[in-house]
Length: 341
Image (cartoon, rainbow, N blue to C red; front, side, top):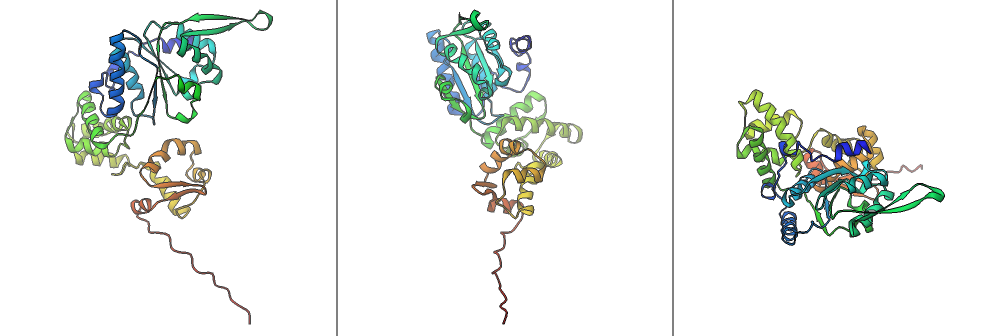
């Protein structure tokens, strides 16, 4: 419990020093989500109530944590952060909830990984703002009801299908974040470059954004590496040519495919003839865990149309063959049978 309180009962002092935006006005992209949240915040402030519970869905790196802190900033309240796997006992949850003040926001990342026994304690906390805790065991066991201040739970998950129906139904606001368009990512790159103190032109920002796989976190990570290259070899100014040379050094091609992406596609094409091949076999061939391939690499490759999932396994698409410069598989030769005379 001390370990949890040590990390959770802080306001995240380094938050304002990162590249994260701190207000809705600075947050780029996800226009519909932003509009819905701004409306909910304004309504809650006018009624002088706490914000309703918010569930944020979507792949990693799209801004779920950032939005949680923006909500806290807009409501003028503290934000306490934790993650689902950290809270492994009901007592941990009770200690966290009872430390909140009225209106505070508690942000639980990867909420789908919370223990089911702990999750059930959240039901009454979210709905009635009370929590029942069992004291002792056996004949001496008794239940104590603790009243909680009205708080807002902001849950984030990358696996929405793993959230139980009772938990999902208790969130008043549910918002899905999608991958960003390149123009939005280019604006994010330019804003981050200003905060990092590096000069960048429109073409340079667009070049980085185009290879960022629709994800602001990846765009900012690429910008940091390109900044290093520009600082040492290009007078601290990023152009399209400078960005392209730096990203080529990182083995990230113009389509945003990195070394592991290309390794997966090349293995699928050259070792297995374009498939179909099972995920376990593919994982062994590239020396990676099947779960990592499914959760980290496959979503982008499927979204961009490089591979398909079929009942028989993974199959390379015509786009994959085109980008990897591999022709269509030849038709099998007709079966020839020699007859003995």
